[in-house]
Image 1 (spheres, rainbow, N blue to C red):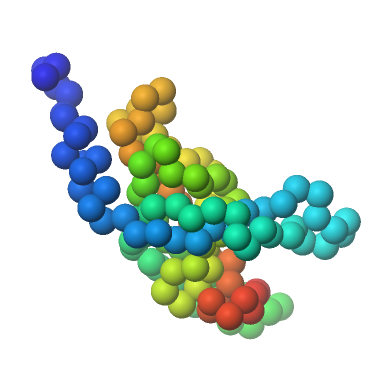
Image 2 (cartoon, helix red, strand yellow):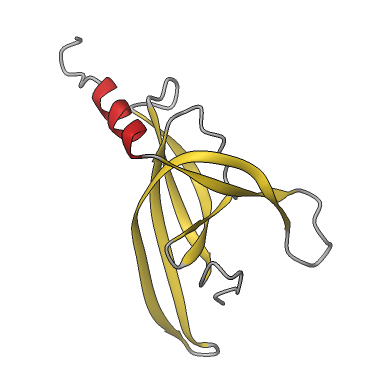
Length: 129
């Protein structure tokens, strides 16, 4: 072991134990002009450990109450996950936001850290805002 460096194998094994398969919706480039993006709802299945779901209700003057949320996740580097991918978790659908961070470093990550923004209020597909 290199002095000052923590071993990464224990955290890799812990993430492997805690991951579950999630269906990934992947954004398709070239969606409708002026509209949103289209998503391939059967793009991939990724092994993810999702945690720290947060929600907050905020008041926006012109829109009334808006419910926002976020989520964190970990996965192994070989997981098929990209920025803008969407996944259902709890009472919402969440989109991966930039950046996807490699731990302990970007060049040779043992695990990846993902951050998500909530894009739909429930798994029914209803937009939240």
